Image 1 (spheres, helix red, strand yellow):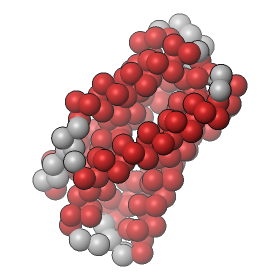
Image 2 (cartoon, rainbow, N blue to C red):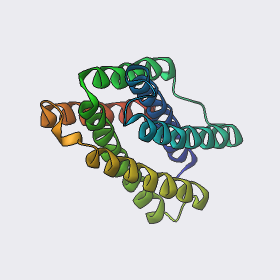
Image 3 (cartoon, rainbow, N blue to C red):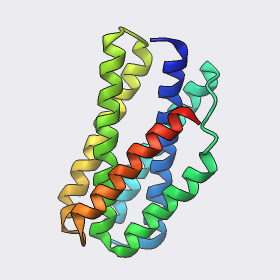
Image 4 (tube, rainbow, N blue to C red):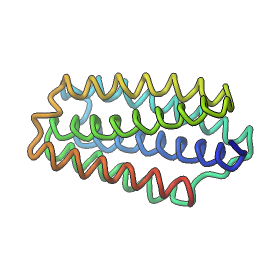
Length: 173
């Protein structure tokens, strides 16, 4: 695995963690701090902030450029979070479940590639730690009623497709 592949991994992961902070910010802007799920969302957002900051530090340390789409992901993430929260708390949780399902797969694929090439133990350790947090977020979202959201299969499918597209685009741009 060469440096450019590792840089792409770091770039897309940093963008994804930033996007997650924006999704949760949008959800909380709509739901406020008094909703029963607000504390859960706030806790997930705090973990995403830590992930984002750790990737920011790794990027600075290694001289990896961020995605040029950072401003777009900021708006898109916030709109996705706010939009799903406007549909109701189950839709907000469906958003979280869909995003975290894709991130779990994405991080697992990255870990497989890193292990296959015996590459970058520091990055592998970060991804493995963050993947476990993302799995907890996904499981919490399902426990909070994600599958009860209106048109759940369609909503989940569209969000998951958007995540896959965002990953591919952010790796390159």
